[in-house]
Length: 375
Image (cartoon, rainbow, N blue to C red; front, side, top):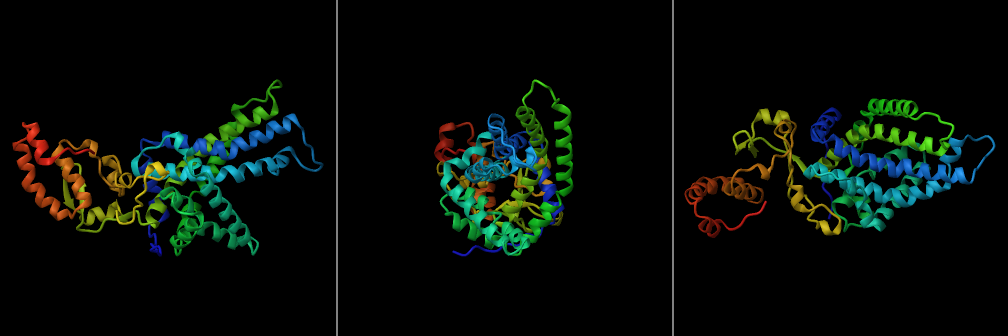
């Protein structure tokens, strides 16, 4: 089945703004996830090479110690066998956070539950990018953007094969490669600042002590550097994850006249032109993957539960905070509104909520009339 090509029209500054609002009050827990990812993908392999080089010193004439570590086959082997699973884990973590505001460090390792596909996807992507790079560097860069959404696709639906993820990414990125390139390029200042700050702090905080092994001091410097760079990585990865949600069709702009739940009045209302200026978004239930979490994917149910603060609604996030709804009747119809026609929901709500309030003292009658409802 061909994938619909959706062209992302948001400017880079808009996606960065949405990323900041998405991270509001949650920078710490998402930073921890990205920090662990950087430790596993960058710091740990260098530390392994440093330890091995400390036990079995290797000297190559005309090359510095840093250059020897950079070309170490141990580091290359580690990257080949670990990068795929860790990249899949990061994609899963960011999608889960974007959709549910849940981010825990253990999710970074969730990619190992689907290790073979993650390894296959990383291997094929790397192979194709290298082959395109043989033509010239520019085709290689274009290829990297063409395949950039493949790990998100696999995180969304682990039943897909690596080649299917690559092909779907190619289709998604048609007419969108420039948008993602500009988005990532817009972080260049933050990346430079993070590099300078990380290098400076690692130099200042790790003293050169005679009794400290060189590999240990270098590892501590790399840990501090990764901790600082992770702050920028959180910001950038969140913006890129929002880009995936848009290009995949999982988030759509809400059109004027459609219904949104207003938590100020605790009722549904039609969107107006002012809302459109603020860019509301809502999940597109027709495009969300129906994947069982037991198989490694994000449940379809989670995709519709964008839990955000009221202050975030101005930047286009979906309001569906069921835990804040005050009574069973409101929750029943909030659930019904997601699966049925909104006009039918309002007609039923107008007639039946009054009936529920009149009978609310009788628990057994309430259960008979409405049934048990879980959020």
